[in-house]
Image (tube, rainbow, N blue to C red; front, side):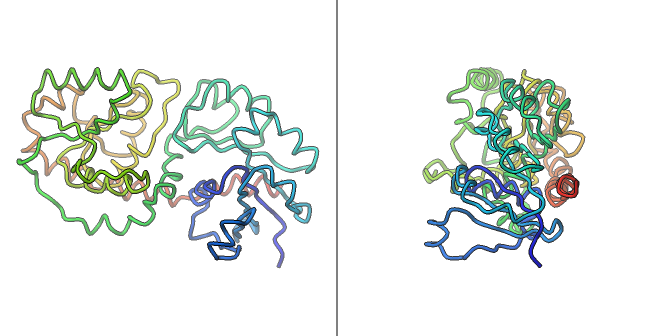
Length: 342
């Protein structure tokens, strides 16, 4: 039976990672021709989602929506891009497709700016869901700090690593390496990060290894490979200290990125340097070392890290299962169902 609904994602094809996260990759049936040459040159890719009896279309270029025949569908949802919001394209879509519903999803782990929020207010959206906080956002939409995890799970390829984690060797504390590992590249162009690290190195010598990777000699240049390489950095270090992207003093615009996602994914104990509100939210759902230490100095300066490693490792062991429980919770589907049925 021909679907009576369609959801069109405006933006590039990687937008499909949003749909995978919201609806479940395993729930979407690929309907386009599965041939690389065809896919590479095609204008769109199409999936079918049975629960909504809806086709889901991803365009190679947002402007190609004008070439799609979506009038055949009774119910239409258009997922706007950031450019659509700023260029005020919503009126164009509402005129061309009467009764269509307009949705905006912000799942990248980037700042949801005040300017973007103001444009969203003018757009009179039917649904706004964001994984990044902004003052006043909850007046017109939904803020879910974990939302970006659904996106990163697919975008950085960790969907394919899930079965690996349970087979990783449960290592003991390694006294041949420094107690704490953190990425030096996080501080390279960041004053607030470098200030914290320089202060910690001065107070607590030989406690923190600041490196590009666990083995800098094989650090790879291709971004996606770097995400896979961090299996070592998050699994075979003793402790991780993770610096989030947003300044730890900024509680107005905080968001979680792949950095925190990886810390949770590999079940290794880590201390999170991030805005207080974000740390508090994550502490409610997962175990992080911030729960155990008053501040970053008490963590880095602790003389009990080696002796209590097994305890902290055990406390962290359920982070991945809790993360996957959230990722595989597709309750956001209900919001789309209501839009299509109304």
